[in-house]
Amino acid sequence: MVPTLLGIMLINFALIQFVPGGPIEQIISQIEEGGSATDRFAGGADSPSFSENSKYEGARGLPEDFIKDLEKQFGFDRPGHERFLLMLKNYLKFDFGESYFRSIDVLDLILEKMPVSITLGLWSTLIAYLISIPLGVRKAVRDGSRFDTITSAAIIVAYAIPGFLFAILLLVLFAGGSYFQWFPLRGLTSEGFENLSLLGKILDYAWHITLPVIAATIASFATLTLLTKNSFLDEIKKQYVITARSKGLSENNVFFGHVFRNAMLIIIAGFPPAGG
Image (cartoon, rainbow, N blue to C red; front, side, top):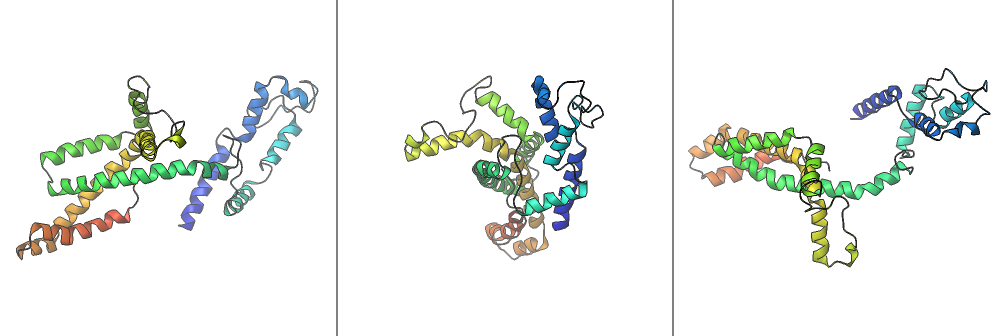
């Protein structure tokens, strides 16, 4: 696991170094949008200290000393291997730096969003298991039937739809996009949530998470259903099941006493299917 994790971080680090954009480019862009912002750093465009051969797009006309100060601020004045080792050291200390999206500490941003991620992950996992396991068992028992064919077609279609695209479709259809406004567009609770009764809070909470949970569940739902079906089919076709039936055991005893227990081992090992 450790070499794999290091390899992933190394590849991501290398890609980020070569992809255009970044904190320095953002600051340069902000300065350009500000118009006369460069006057704070130098006397004018004819100053000899202005960079004409900068490696950054948009840096033409900015003071070279200013660009070097930016590189030092963000650590780009160091060799790549030093930056990578420094990144690992900071990660070990849970120092993830500052977010350029919200201008707050990344760790604070993670903690702020964690309740939403946990909520979606738990409910998506629960719903996926409650629906997928019974459906997968039913498909295994009725393998090759019309029910199996129809549900398989529906599952394949559901699996082929990207989650983000399905989420947009749900918003357009049911969150006031173009058709119905049955569900809220954002947030986990409504205004005045604290003043609601216990039942009102539960209903309001369920109302807000319905569409996000459906969008997050669709892919894992399809995967888990097919995994359940294939797992049970493999067990049903094994020799011990045929032997148990030949000895006169009832289908319920064979299925719930042996098949169900053995088939569920693979499914439980894959818990959870949804990350939220």
